[in-house]
Structure formats: structure tokens, C-alpha cells
Image (cartoon, rainbow, N blue to C red; front, side, top):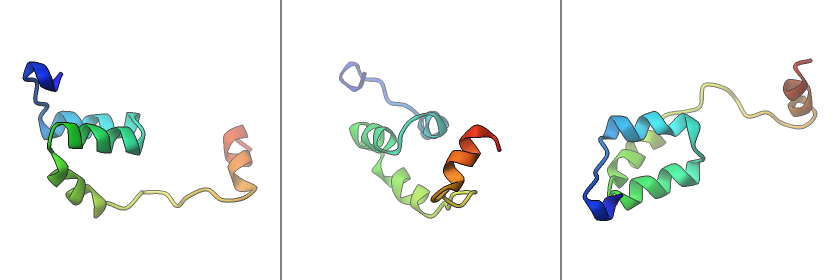
Length: 63
């Protein structure tokens, strides 16, 4: 896409973030030379704490 001249807007790239893996998102930002937005996103903290131990299975099953 980049070779054909496509350049996504920051909003377009940000809209993909919830649906793609972190590595895919970072790769896309680097491919389109938008690393600056990665620095601004580093300051954003996740809304939920990570799931640890036995709680993960309970969360998956909806218990």
C-alpha cells in the first residue's frame, strides 16, 4: 500500500489499534513512518489490570 502512495491518517491507524496485535500496530506505524504516534500512545495506560493466574480461566468461561 505504501509503495502505491497510500498514507493513512493518524485517526485511521488509531482506529485499528483495538483490533490488531500490538506488534502489528507498531509495524504499521513504522512502515508508514508514523513512529511519533507510538510515543504518544505509550503514555496511555490500559483501562483494566492484566488477568493473572487462575482468574484468567474463570473470566474466559464467564464464571
